[in-house]
Length: 282
Image (spheres, rainbow, N blue to C red):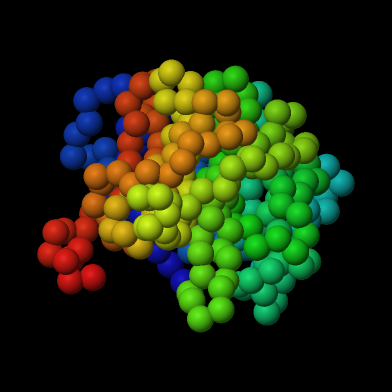
């Protein structure tokens, strides 16, 4: 299965200059392509859905598979039905990877033998450290995109899907965080879902995405079934979160992504906007 992406060289280089029509191009990549990150020497590194590395030497125009993730002894660090989520350059210089392991037959519901894991490479992807578990065994957790704050904390937003009798279920969001470069993880105290008008309006929050603001707060956006993006904030690095509020950003029930423009205080949100008529007609 393939998907199409547009890679803009301006954003990858980190060097501000005036963009021209030749700065963007379209390329077909593997399904669940994660990354890329810029390696020392100018190559780009990405991870595909089989947890196999792929590199580009021409700024993303062509990609070559270079094999699975291996440890210092040459052993493959993880096998099975994997779903990579984030490839991130850390402040330490290491490259971090988060991914899910989903045992066969457990594509939804409890992941008794799987879960979400963290690994990192300190030599530009040549070798990887043994993965550390983020979620507990048997957890219905679904972490999304990892970030690192200015103070160095790793923050990983997360969604739980709670099924209920005679109902499609309820999405509840939290966040995991680590202060020791991913060796151990804690979870936020608060669980987040839509609760407005004293509880008269309740609903799911799903697929959270987090960014750090210029004053050090964490801002979380979540999709909902109310045709509006939900938001919450943390002032202590993700340990506690404010009650969820629906924003005035109209949105379909599709994933949202928050990020910061390089070397800037400007935040970027990408989402599928819903029109007034789409909301009125459901």
